[in-house]
Length: 131
Image (cartoon, rainbow, N blue to C red; front, side):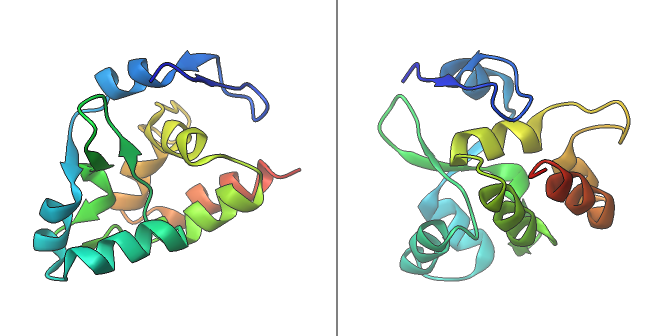
């Protein structure tokens, strides 16, 4: 899995496999279901509907970044941010990359800002990407 992520949204050219190596933790769907207290079919539905993003890793297992789960729920503001990024034309891989990329002006990553209850700024930035 070595597809390039395009620079159409101000993203650097980065291989997907490099992103996998830089992200701390990925959870298989059954683990996500257990954390959320829902059946795995519900997690698959969230992925299909765009409320969560997943990537099939080199081992063939579909996984979700662990940071997308906060406690026993999806990180507050994540699904709305994912919708904004999709509306801006981001692919799922580009959206994951954007959420996990360090942004010194936040500081941290957009995902960390969401987890720290700073979603308004993250959503503002995601909306601005569409223009």
